[in-house]
Length: 386
Image 1 (cartoon, helix red, strand yellow):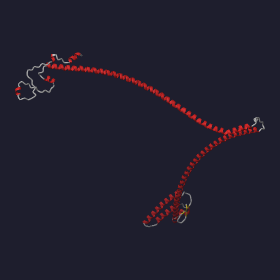
Image 2: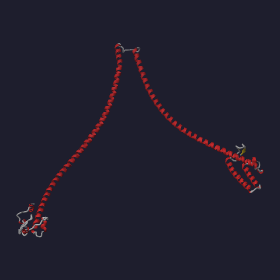
Image 3: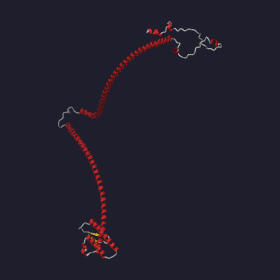
Image 4: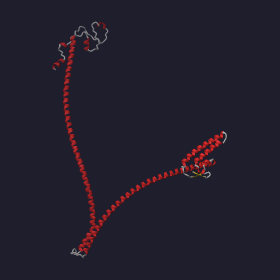
């Protein structure tokens, strides 16, 4: 290390570090302009203004000696070596400082761990103490509640005892009169008043008192029994009343249902009556129409009677219609009239045939075969048997 420091420090007595220059010419640096400038130009060396660094000038100058450059490099090497030594020293100092700081940090970290362990232990102990305190508090709260209930119970009993004491004091004060009266009577009674026979007044009074006391006890028992029977009867009465109310509500509901059903049946009967009346009117109208047709058929049969069909009273309606048709056809063949009359008769025969079919269908649908009846027409109130 000392060798490097000696190399880093330049030596003035070393001839290698001395620069020798020959002053062959007078070097003058002109700062002012003179009048006799031309006379002095012969011996004056003009120095140009240089803006470059000295090291660069030495490197680029062709006239620089190799020895000068080497010296310059050695100087730079010495300077760099000194800087390196300084940096190493600084680095060493910094490393020592870092080591010290690391040791301090490790110590602080260990202290922190120790503190964390102590704090963790403290927290665990605190939690244990807190749980114990909480359990103790809960136990004390429960104990306080139990004690408070006992205190309330005792206070209630104390109040009851005070009330009873007051009642007893009032009773004692009330019975005090009788006590005083009995004491006065005892003072006035003779000495041998306890020795009484069967006929004595005191014995009779005592027996009377015993009889009345027994009777009183019996009456009290009977009163208690009757009270119990009355309460039981009252309870049964209330039960029966509730059952009666329930049954009444059920009957009212059933009655309302039956009333609604009756109303619906009455409405339905009214509709049926209206329908029956309508059917009766329609049947009456059809009966009148049928009576008119039968009367017309009977009139035509009287006018168109043929002997081979037999009497009219024994003929059926279909036979009458056949007879009327046959009569019309005979008249058609017998009468010699124009074609118009023939066409008229043919149309009349067709209408008669169609009317016969319609009447036959209607007659069969409304009048059963083999039954008889009388139909009255509104026109002439005649009668026709069916």
